Image (cartoon, rainbow, N blue to C red):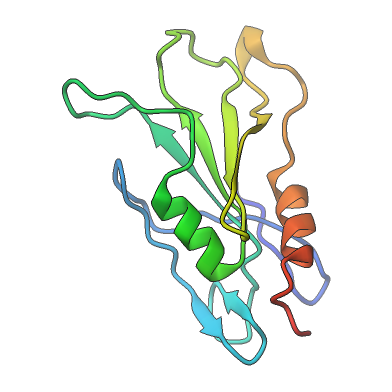
Length: 148
């Protein structure tokens, strides 16, 4: 279920963007150079404060997916001045529902591996998890780009 943001009420939310492929996603955005932000839905609309996507197991023979952020993730984070999160969606453990690592590319060009974990499901449910929205808001507010 999506939780849509509401700019009028100053609420943070999330929505699903267009589907990507195993290795590429597109962030639909409307950049505003005068305000130093990117809008998600229309110019002057919802402000993008972060992006999250899964890092699934590779489908290429002889290769594996690392628990880390890619150069594309780092470049996107830096150019948009938003944190970008990658959720490890690999099935290496064979235990569906286990909490997965969340890694982050930061607007300053660095990365933070294992910044948090997902909540998990079923017998692996931890009744907790990492709050990506709050973390993104804290980082976005310090990135220096917004001029509101």
